[in-house]
Each structure stands twice: as C-alpha cells, then as structure tokens.
Length: 253
Image 1 (cartoon, rainbow, N blue to C red):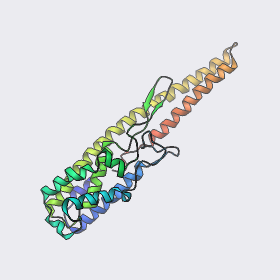
Image 2: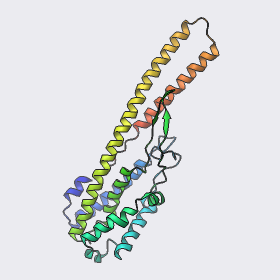
Image 3: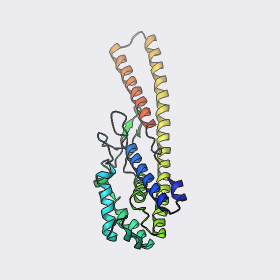
C-alpha cells in the first residue's frame, strides 16, 4: 500500500486503482482483527465473546462521508470538489475526519472491543498479557489511512488537494506499521516466555513422575492432585502458545 501511495501519478485510472486497493486493504484489516481461535476473538480485549470490528459499510463509511459533506457542502465525487483547496483538506483531515476515530466514534462505528486486554497465568507465580485490543492506536491510524484514501481520493480533486490525502495516508501508515511492529515484539517476548515455561513444566512433570515411582510412602490422592494440577498448567500454557502464534497483526498492512 505504501508503494502504491508513493507511485501515484494523479491520473484518473491510478487514483481509482489506489482507492479500490485501499478499500480492499481496509476490509482485509477488519477481517484480520475479527480472527478467532475457535473459542474467543483474539483482538476483542476482555470482550472476547463477539467479533470486535464492525463492517465498514455498517456505519463508519456513512459517518465519514457525512463528515466530508458537512465540511465541504458536497461529496468527494462531485465535480465541484475540484474547488477544495489543499489547506481546506488539511484542516478537514486533522479536524472533523480525525474526530471520527476518537474513543466515542471508534466505539460507535468501528469497534466493540474493550480497551482492557486479557491476562493469563502461565505458571503458579507468573501472569502475562495474552491478547491485543482492536482499539490500539496503531489500528486506528491504519484504518484512518485506508479509509481516507478509499473514500476521498477521487479524480474530482485538484492534484495538490489529492496529494494532501496521499501524504497524510503515507504518514499514518508509517506510524501504524511502527506501532504494529512494537506490538509484534511484545507478542514475541510473551511467546518466548510461554515456551520457556512449557519446557520448565514438562521437565517438572517428568521429575514428578520419577519421584512418585520411587517413593514408598506417598498419599496417592495427594500425588494425583499435584500431577493433575501440573498437567492442567502445561495444557493451558500450550494453548496460550497456539493463541499467541495466531496474533499475526502485521499481515494485512
């Protein structure tokens, strides 16, 4: 997408192609943020029982175009849109358009996720964060970039006005990707920690089995309880590893 923005030559054909590409990228992003491991939605935060993201056409698209019409008195495809100046477009993107991604509007039109993320116990003494919220700033910036291009980058605009949209989208995508990269590093760190705990618990389980087989005086009920608890912790840790591997949040950029 960044390459497409950089190479835009302001012809009607390339503008249309770019707008369509941005729309498909936005749909792909929403689909990715609605991924489930079969039991919960991974980007829902603590509200993991339902898909966090709404379809763009179900509210956000109308809200954005309504804001554009309210600002300029016309739609982005109107021939009169050629009169919109670069400064006016800058004011709109930094003002009314950006306001469509604040907490209230994001919750109303884009996301039903919670800001809070899930934490999971991976051992008897250690808890880590094992989810990401679709409400993260990086997600919003990428949604802003894709939606401003898909909805407002039309051949009706003057070249310098269109360039304002392109430049703003480039900046937002760069910032969003940087944010995703940082979150990816955090996920990698958590995954590595889960793997280490898995190894430790597997070794502990082996040691426990060995000791139980050699002890002559042992309470069978107590021993079974300890082994069952350890087994449950191992299974939970393996499950968390699987979930973390599915958090491929940068694939849609």
